[in-house]
Amino acid sequence: MVYKIVALLLLKTSYFVFWLRLYISSLIEEERFVSWETSQETHDKQLQHELRLLGNLPQHIAIIMDGNGRWAEERSLSRTQGHREGINAVRDIVEASSLLGIRYLTLYAFSMENWRRPRMEVTVLMDLLLHYLRSELEELHRNNVRLQAIGKLNALPKNVQKQLFDCIEIMKHNTGLTLTLALSYSARWDIVRAVQMIALDVRRGKLSPEDISEERFASYLQTHTLPDPDLLIRTSGELRISNFLLWELAYSEIYVTSKFWPDFRRYDLYEAIRAYTKRERRFGKTSQQILEEQTTEKSSLKRILSALHS
Ligand code: FPP
Image (cartoon, rainbow, N blue to C red; front, side, top):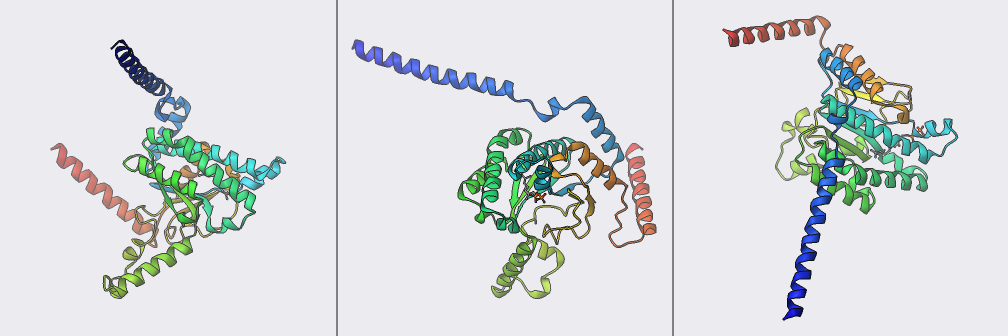
């Protein structure tokens, strides 16, 4: 009988200790977590405020992150170190975009052609990606970021795939910035894949050739949940699209900076956005037409506002 009581007490104590530990660790976790908004510096807040005042911020920014290798070479470092430093740039740009209220950010992290690089470099890039997903998950999730991925994802190593899909699943209901990683991505591959699926649907009688419009075609692309990028940024000064979002970039504004990706930080992003807000997006129309449209929009807005006030 005494043994039973002692055993029961021990059991209850260990349960109690277990729950106490869990409670304490959640408190510590809570304390450790500081949202990006809370920790944002005053100077950065001011810069973002000024950008917002310019109006007309891009809804979707796509970035070709180039120059990790050359950044490292310039410093007599290994390419690995260049990629590692590139992750710090990713962190800063994701955080700044989220704080600024950019809705979509798409990063070209690994192209299908990148598989042709030396095996060692590919392994390093995959390890870095895995590490990034593991270490950033909590912070991204708590800051309401939604993660997505495009590309031939089943070509990625199994452990990367698992981590990636787990992260996507955990963050799928978030409503803040949509961060899309292009991994093992090729725009031509995606276009061909879309054509194959359309052909199958035609063969099955689900779709007739006359119904294939631009919108219908785009709905077969992996990017169908994203609006077309408003702004494409490419670092390291190269003037190429490199098989990135070929269909989707049709009317995007392009901004190229000579900075290598590891040096690219939020202030460079703000510079790119500032340049974007000064561009006139005509979508094939004339400047005069755009001006007239804006005037009509403004006057109808005025009419709605005065109707609301009266
Ligand atoms: C281009 O630089 C960059 C890449 C091929 C990879 C980009 C990857 C990262 C920034 C790190 C991982 C990303 C995420 C999202 C976790 P390059 O190697 O082609 O440079 P080079 O043109 O100077 O040789």
